[in-house]
Length: 162
Image 1 (cartoon, rainbow, N blue to C red):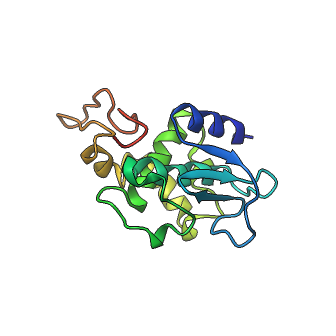
Image 2: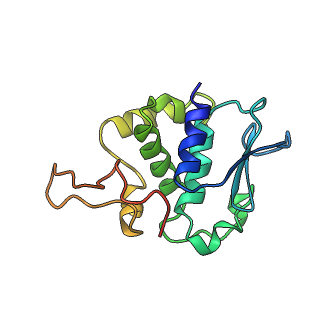
């Protein structure tokens, strides 16, 4: 199970992760964000990839606003280049960094039934949200078609938004 690998990676890059009790009414089963910390309930966590997606929200949020993030992300101010698309792109990059199949992130229980389409999209090298990661300094842009610079998506220059 990739849960331990994901948690170790998130901690290594500086995202606070804690095991704890997650209420049954949380948006995602067994995982939530609480004051900038990713909290998960190992017994209730349905999809380990949800840890990556929620961590993506923390990672793409400006440092000054991270500690204010909590479960209801839609209630928070969305920062330029720090929205759903960028969190998804970040999560995919993390999934690739960990050597996990895209199905761990884009599991059959999420993404409003569009998981297969997202797997195909990213596999074809179309990366929704990656331009936002470039604009906020987390990834590099290719200087020529087909060129992949160091830190070029899906590799990142920084795992946390500077």
